[in-house]
Amino acid sequence: MILSCLILKAVELSGIAFAFAITELLVITRSGCVNDLGYLPADLAGPPRRHGRRNRARVIFVDGDRLGLRRRVRRLRRAAYGAWFDWRGGVETTTDVRSADHVGDRHVYQPTDVWDLPKVLPVRETGPDDVFVDVGSGKGRVVLFAARRYPFRRVVGVEVSGELHALARRNVAALGPACRDRVELVNADVNDWAVPDDATVFHLFNPFRGETFLGFLDGVAASQRRRPRVVRMVYTPPVLHDDVVAAGFAPVRVRPRFTLYRRLP
Image 1 (cartoon, rainbow, N blue to C red):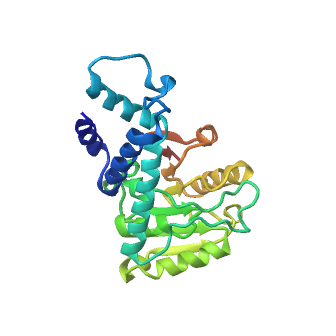
Image 2 (image 1 turned 90 degrees about the vertical axis):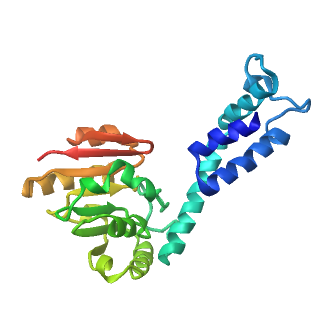
Image 3 (image 1 turned 180 degrees about the vertical axis):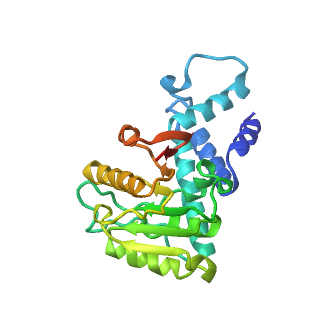
């Protein structure tokens, strides 16, 4: 039954995303994924099966995912969570920004799914001796989240774009004094910026590639030589995994779209 499919989907999805899933299901069953005869196309429906309507509902949901239903629900859920994050904090971190400083191997600003960060970096595995650095901090969404949710002694955001740096400063001003006093925002090219020798946790939402990325990894290694310590790095998505491993980092926890690495001194 379609009702049973909705119940199973509710286990996976939550809140507004589940409502969007219901809407998507109605679209699929009424018109979106059927041909002119009213059946799923043969290349999507797969081989004939038994058990009539019950099985048809199952096929619709499976093939709906193949047609991008899961991706659309994830995108809608991200937008809903982002709007909630901004509304709750009195900030604006959601809209994409293409800055004139994002050229070459530097990527445009896109907000990360920061609410997933504790899945790869649990709060209980951090402490007041840790210093957190968000590399390519943009409007400051990760900085805001880290200052609110984690016990870091200091939270640093590094951003090359002066425009985004100014927006981040405005967002950080909305924090309470206890959190705001622990935040430091730096407007600099990461390759011209000295990695702090007390930094222990780094976060990168794919801010750059190429020589800029390799230069950053070299900077972390140089900082470790100056002050030996264990450093961790959350990298999402880990598109340059091989370069990270070649720089001496080892993956210690892998989650969808997030990987936590550790580098020993």
